[in-house]
Length: 108
Image (cartoon, rainbow, N blue to C red; front, side):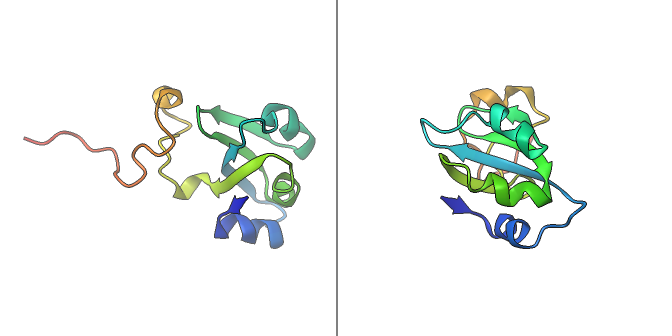
């Protein structure tokens, strides 16, 4: 499983009062995050086709990353996965769409 550097820091040295917003990618037969997160004082913020945005206390990140079936965990703030929790159309977009290009208005 891949953990980004910020997630590893949260796992190893959490801010006891901090909150983590993470993008979690599961294996095909991975866990139901909506069922797992309440036990970790967390919640699903947005579900997409390829990844899920979750929020939980930083002190619980270590418990999340040991759940079987996770493929990748990264911070939501630093990723351009095309999975913006505030955009209603993101469930239809690819997890890699816009990964390198920001949203831009047409010019001309």
